[in-house]
Length: 159
Image (tube, rainbow, N blue to C red):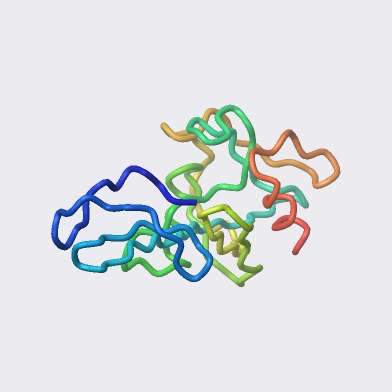
């Protein structure tokens, strides 16, 4: 789906138009023939287990405000994905973790975010909320709360 946020060509400043290219609706510059491609966002998450329970955060941001999810977030440009997953866990929960293995790569048709999921091992720290988290807790897989993202259950079950 084409976003109408970009109205002008980044190369020549001409007004962009919508054009069907290779059966896909794209923004196109009729002046310099530039096609605007939107890159997906990459997010990283880590599943942390303690006493056979999964670490979840209650989200303090949209999407999914007030619902629970695995700790995670966007990978910064140039950042190693495993480093991003560990950073997000630390920022959102106060726990320093070691990333131990890749669980999988998850994507959905029509959704711009690709999620790279890892398993992690707790190293140090104490649970503490941040400006991104309303609450933090460990849950049994049999008693998971309402999750913000359907893919989280897929990730948890991939263990």
